[in-house]
Structure formats: structure tokens, C-alpha cells
Amino acid sequence: MSQTPTPNPPELVLLKKLWAQGPLPVRVLHDACADQLDWSFSSTRKTLTRMSDKGLVVYQKPEAKGVALYTARVSKTATLANMARDFMRRVLEVDGPLPHVVFSASKLLNDEELEELEGLLGG
Image (tube, rainbow, N blue to C red; front, side):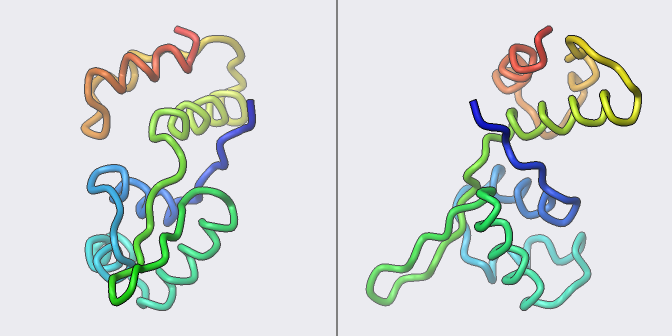
């Protein structure tokens, strides 16, 4: 099983919006994240290009006169599990199953996602 790429902080902001709202045009995504990412529209475009290269998002070309869309390519729960494992190992030097209970108050995860995360974390 291949490792889910780890997003950097700005990439995570963009992914969270895509996970919450589904496929979005770059302008809508940029505007939706503007309060968290204090940067230009071109920075958002460039970041999305890098995210596509890393396998974090998929660029969907427009049909006829439609609008191009970006979609999250990585699973929310797999990404969060990998980030949690990395933090626990690298920063706290903890090996083994991770306590999923720390995610129970998350506004980002619903009950089904919490259950999936528990399985991914080995709990």
C-alpha cells in the first residue's frame, strides 16, 4: 500500500475545503480560503499545481465552455492518520497503535470517519 503524501500547512487548508465541499474551481477555492491563506490568486494556482504533482489533488479539465475543477485525490482519514502517526513518531517518539480518542472532539470528522480513522490508527 503506498503512503499518502503529507500536505504542508497551506495544502492542508486547501484540502480541508475540498473535503468539505467537493470539487471546486480554483477561484472559488481561493476565495473560500482567503481568510486563512493571505496570498495571491497566482499563489493558490501554483500550490494546486504542486499538489497535483504530489498526488494530493486532481485537475479536471473543463468540457467545452465549462470551468476547470480541482478535487481532493487523497482520503481525509488516511491523510489525517498519516499525519498523526508522523507527529507521534517523529515528535513524541511514540510507536504502536495511536489513541483515536484524541480525534473525538474534531469538527473535521463525522462518526463514520472517526470509526474509519480508528481502524487506520490501529486502535
